[in-house]
Length: 231
Image (cartoon, rainbow, N blue to C red; front, side):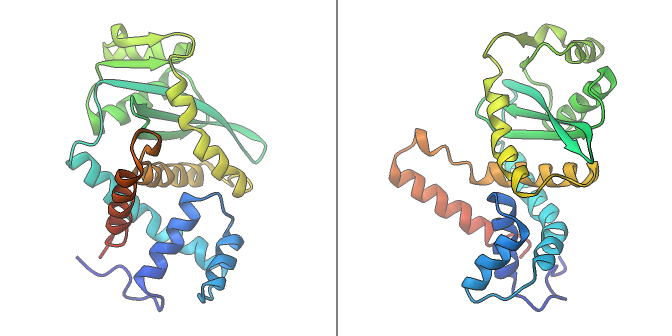
């Protein structure tokens, strides 16, 4: 594998840390620049933008590959939901599929939320993860229409509060969206939300379910793996 950092003056460690800070935390480009400067790293905020665009997809792809290879996802129950995202005054939709543990499986940015779009979204997710045993959705008719075509409408479940898992999974992205002062186009929305979902999965350690010692061990393992990405 060719070294992806070979034409850069900065070290791979600095690049990985910069991408992590910008994607994972609700920080602006200039806030990341300032925090790095306090640590003796002098780069421009446009460098932060370039690095996350260049290396973010690469890091996210490695994380997804590792998690799928080790079976760190579920076909038992999926939760599907979509949120409104404003881009240049126009309403777009960000679809999200998560498993029963809150693991982000797929995100899909579109201009519509009709049957055709729901079908494309479901096919995307199933191509990567297979067919789930149960699909929890809200009452958007597009889901049911798409599932009739796929032949798994009997697996759909709707009901009050049943889809809180998917709705809660939007919150980290919403906080991150605020720091970015909106998105300029749908391609950027799709790219960033996909990268953000993978990195969120990697560092989502469910600390409320484990003791402090286990959390520290898992956190150290997650950071250790991150330091080896694209190496």
